[in-house]
Length: 122
Length: 105
Image (cartoon, rainbow over all chains, first blue to last red; front, side, top):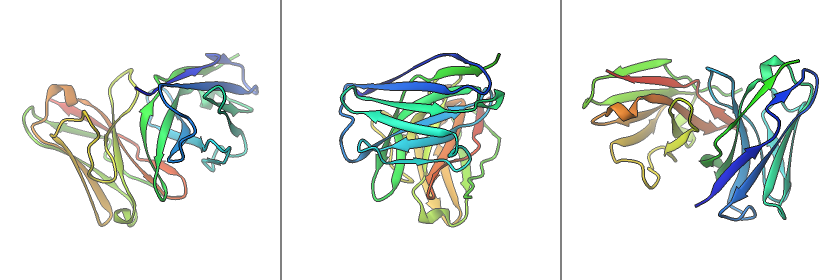
């Protein structure tokens, strides 16, 4: 059974960089039909896609965060990571990592991590 | 940018059929999926590629997509189906609908 687990600081100061890692277990991170994504959910609000990475390192990001986001992958550790710079209180959210199934286009997220709450506060 | 619109809330009586809509321009040209999210839990995929059901999802969950509207239908709704439901599609980026809170009362 595939499992994803987010890890990283739960508290980040304004203007600093949020860094999270997702560790994949129970399956391969290098299968071609899978991409690996980050999604966030502010308290009491809906889901917002942040970005996705392929095991080769190819990435695509949501336009509204593109200038502040970087996603990378370490296939040897079966991990992919998120960095979000210059954070503000508006970046406070539960951050999820998830596996994305890809056909001719990216399709859906079939496995999700449990999520980790990141609070931006001084 | 592409947008998916869902009603904020919906209600249904136990045993009845719940329908949740997701609207977007020429949505029928895209694959739509649906997620169920209960309080404090991660989203769970309940429908993918418009109408396919993942293993382990009850048959009472079904989906359709025509014109500008995709619909998630829950037949014989149970109390355990009370949750937030999100539609999602791809239009050069991943797009989520705003979510619909389904109340079973």
